[in-house]
Length: 340
Image (tube, rainbow, N blue to C red; front, side, top):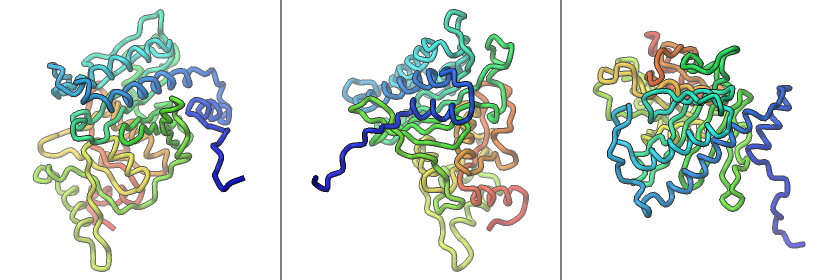
């Protein structure tokens, strides 16, 4: 036989992996969460295909409407939102859906009602499509409270109560990164099979990195702890190397790099954005859950993100997440001390 390696015949797909995780955790694997994740995979496959041809079939132009965040919507945002809602509703496993694109929560009618709530940003960073920059879908999943029929109260809960969270990043490949509360795994879409295959098992964020990721165009608005922290990275004590700056401006891409290589991603509150810019339910919570499950930390600067109790579905919050030691350095500046 030649030295060529035969293709593996033991292909671990996302669905298979999630099911075996549930069995291992001793959960009564009803398959409900698996079916729900299948609906999210379908949406991700649809978006992955259409992001590639968006320019060719004129999906990139503005849809002529503005979403609840005041951002002009791209056509692909609208399509992605529609397919995600239709797919989740048809799964029969959801009760409440919250989308970045819709002002109100979607309460699923009884005929299709299930036991889960999904909060999501169907196409984060969509303004970057034209520039060929990675964009993504972010999602978090709650189980409805015992006895609840599925109301807005089922999603106005701390991120620590989520049962699963993840994102799909669309770039040179489509990568889906997921946690169901037992660590973090990464899957890559095999276009030939039409399946997400396990390629990054048990992602662990390094305890300290060498990269910082902040939009320093806002530096004149930053509060002193952030200014001082960033200066400590750029002008370290002699003998230490400064950190490298990497800021893509697409949260999914910046967090993905941070999970794999370590370092810190930050979008603080400042004098202009009093509560920060990132949305709590479907941006900060899912990314904080993934970061903690990978061994990192996620904070607002003063408190753990996953402990915040939301009061509205589109609430914003400051975010610092990444390598444990790097985030702890930020916390020292917020407490008034120095950094490492």
